[in-house]
Amino acid sequence: MMAAIGLTAVPATADSPPDPVPISAPTHTLVTLNLTGNGCVGCYVRPQQYIPARNNSGKEISWDGQGRKVRGDSITFRVPTENTRGMSFAIFNPAYNDGFYDAEPVIVFQYKGYEPGGRVERSQAIKASSASPCWAGTSKDKVSLDVNVRKVRVEGIKMVDNQPTGGPTPVRVTLAWVAPTEEVFGGFTKTDRGVVAVQDTYPCGKKS
Image (cartoon, rainbow, N blue to C red; front, side, top):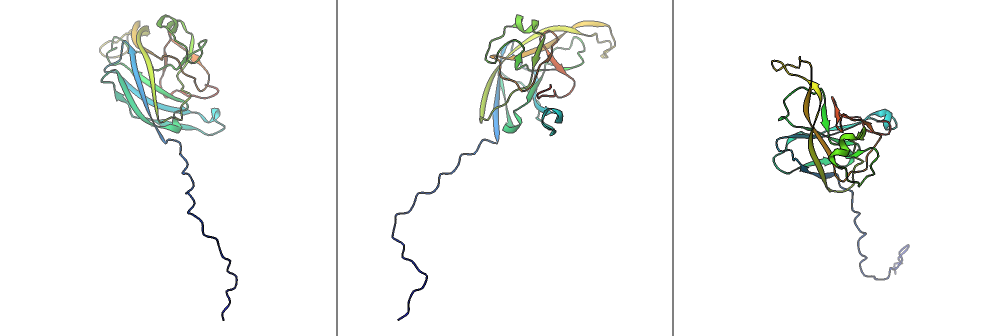
């Protein structure tokens, strides 16, 4: 007779249920901007992100989205979720061509002195001396933000023969802010009658 060595009988059991599959965080987020106020049909909006190394423990983070033309009351972007922290949105209205303004407006997410979730009127926005265009970001797969879009006149340069060679003159620019305001990533910067405008991607982070 042959003996079975090293084998142990295992009692019959029902099949165990499989381990639950973890739900992973979304890799991309659909961000919809609902443009209220005067609206902004024909405007160009571009999502972007720049966190300098000095503001992020020595690691620079940047991402540039594709600018798109607004054709209705809203515009939606598909952006990497991880890049929403410190994201800003440039907004440009080509109809405002009565002069030269040497910077591109960005959408304000919070005015200094107003808590996140608060409502800011146009008169209050214009008087606000500092603001931040840096979104604190999201972990959701879909986000909808209402953006109040108005126009304001600021000092620019008169155009002569399609060149910015004239003297100072009031020019129209876009004044846009999230309503209600959102939590921001980083500090605040000075405004020009409520407008935050930059010549390059705005640097977000703790020391912005």
